Length: 421
Image 1 (tube, rainbow, N blue to C red):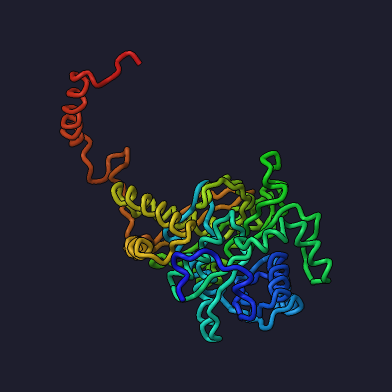
Image 2: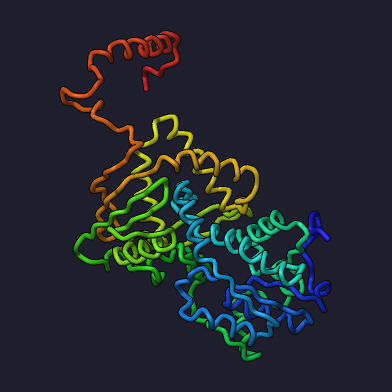
């Protein structure tokens, strides 16, 4: 039965059924798994291995979920797929409002696409998640799963009145878990929430909801604050081939190892640490986040330097429009629709031209251009030189300016210029 046009399922409809629950292993996951079990639902937990920097023991997630009543736990390795999607985001320069690299949005796409085959193998027809009814992630899980498997029902506890009547928020969930002795790692004193994967960390909620709380309130997990970085700059060199990073500092890399290496190097130099963004959520409210994405920022900036050499002004203008659209598609949970497919084709034409070696200097959060070599599709030349070289004859500009001047004089004579401003 399709969930199209149907409101969210409720706990009464789930009793006696087996559901597939996308579990991170955190407070919400533990609470929801146990609460559903207590209400007669069989919960099979599915967790994506996304290289979460804040999860020191990934295997512990399975132990926690089983202790909370899960009848099954399935870990799905998706680090390589996430790295590929992250590089794809870099190729589109897909940053959302304020420079956010869409690390969570990309992860939701990869997670949903990666979990669904495992869910189908087990014949489960209901997919559940623990995303808040006020956020973007509920949209992403819902829409992506609807697009990839429209027969799959979706259940969201945070849109179920029975769940909402029992749990008002974090404190009530902690009290519940303490009451039943569930193995949570959360505490009442934790001042904010963190969502993590190898592309980056998102810190939000708690005390970060107050704009009086500075971004530096967060404790970085993927690096250090810029002022804590070394007092000496570090050189970083990346070679791209058709849009893919293939060598970093003379070492061959693939997408995954490139991001891991860039995270380490960028993080220790304070790159991409603590970006403060107040953004427009898709559901229509503003939210505040503090972001870490050292590898995405470092590789992304180097990629941007190459684009400056390759794109002419019309291609640049179109690419920037495409980039903004790609970012919005990812952020709003539409990475699979026809528009997203069309945008990928458009970006791929540019990607095929992006080859070259870029060196930058990293110093206390800053990225400074050093040099670039071997850029076969660069259109930068000495034609713009102030010296007597290049194919551009200075005197040839006389005719160019004469033509432009016809229009400039015409609009002035027509009274379209505010002469007294």
